[in-house]
Image 1 (cartoon, rainbow, N blue to C red):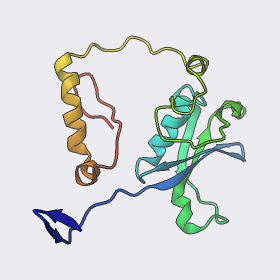
Image 2 (cartoon, helix red, strand yellow):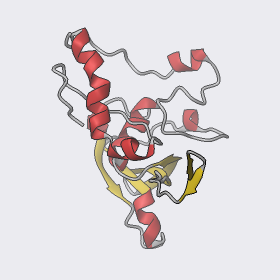
Image 3 (tube, one colour):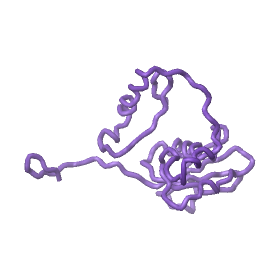
Image 4 (cartoon, rainbow, N blue to C red):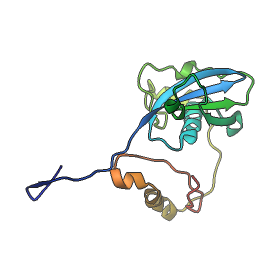
Length: 173
């Protein structure tokens, strides 16, 4: 119900939905669950890869052989699209002890949940090399470009997003 000018009337609203996503690592027949996070379904593979990179589990895209949804018949069919398997192309599973958390994991940038600022410095992620120079005009235009691609946000106001742009402001992903 909506109330406008003192009058109540029925109104339909669009609501963003979320479902859990389990991220698993797969290496030579071994499977380990790394995290469970909430997400709006879609771009699950990118979310899993970005999460693993942000947490320092992988340092380069070459460490990922492939990403698939779960096909394990022991998992209920409706849950298989809520489980992502990330197959690694390395010799051994990485040390997952730094990922152990006893609280909510989010799809945030990786800062949330750290015990202190020093923990951000200890992740072992090398600094980025110098990239292209981008004009301030392009940078300030990016939020509008992203917003134009976020139909769900326009209708619900309930989601946030990330995107990859090139140095000319072209949306890549």
